Amino acid sequence: MTSFAEILAALEEQYSAVVSNPPIPAERRLKFRYPLALSVRFRALSGTSSISGAGRTVNVSSRGVLVVSQHAVSQHDIRVGARLELKIEWPPLLDRSIPLQLFALGRVVRCRAIDFAAAFEQHEFRTMRSSSQPPAGSGGRVLEWPAR
Image (cartoon, rainbow, N blue to C red; front, side, top):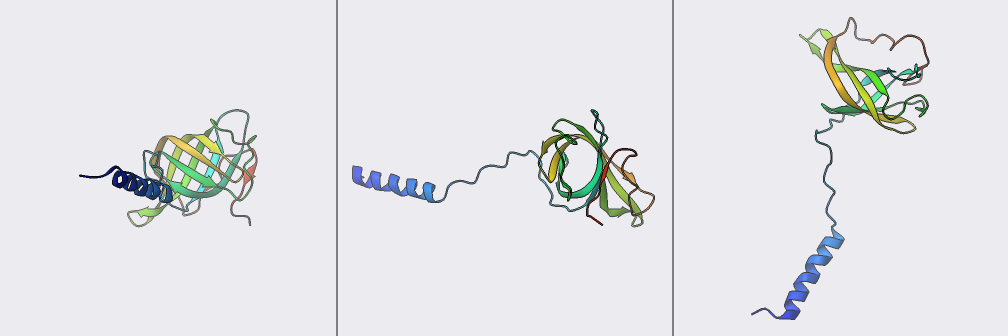
């Protein structure tokens, strides 16, 4: 038969293990994010903002993307909830010779000083004429990344 002191000792041991090794919080995202650094051009589609810019992806999933820009992303330029058009250069070539891009429409879900996250509403792969992307949008201010 186990004594009360033995039960307390066992509980204390379990408690100290939990305190010294706290559980890692569970991932809240539904889709895995792939760490991909790809060139991206974006353009605001909503509001009075005529901002367009360029940057790099930090990670991409089937539901969204995290984009970093060397230039500050002003919350007056891109706000949470703003609709965006994104053109992401895709590394694999179609038939080993045709450049591809991931074209997506989405909404900004988080915006900080140098990055923003967007959730995809629609996305598709498109072919490109050459390996370099044309400037995103016309009119408005263009943010270049990396700086030249």
